[in-house]
Image (cartoon, rainbow, N blue to C red):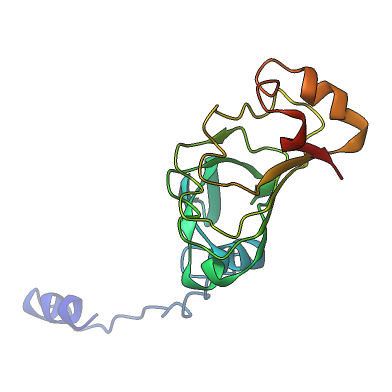
Amino acid sequence: MQLAQEIKSKLGDYTSIKTDIPSAPQEPDEGGASGTLSKELEEAAKIFNLSGVDITVEAGEVIYKGEWIITGLTEFGASLTELTLPDELMGLPVTTIADGCFKDSNVSKLIFGCNISSVNKAAFDGCANLRGIYITSLDPNTFHPSSDILDGLVDCVFYVPEEVYTDYILDYFWGYLDGNKILTY
């Protein structure tokens, strides 16, 4: 305003300039670009290291695109003995467990969300306490375990829902596991 007043004065116009001063902008709502993460994502981030999803802000709204990958555990997550992998976060599926994700953790019981479709090699390296991996999906085709997924896990077994046990043991990709490595819950 001062600059405009000085220019007007140089041009011989000595009338004052009046300008409405706008009010201060509102703080973004929670979840906005400067807001906090949702409680759901905040809680998951206390346990899991996550990637795979693009987070952008469009017209003041946070947009999530993609599928979640669990890349590891936080220090707190690695200290837990029981972990439940979420089905989804922010409306997007949790689908993948990365290499070495649970490496050297204290986990003894692991519950897969129903969208887990990929477990990368060596996800369970050093998990000496892991005794049970609980599969929640009713469809054995959701996740196909690799032939070496339980290597080094002497006492670990898969638990599947009782009502679909036969589907699992007859499935081509699950069938290589002997009968005592697939049990029901």
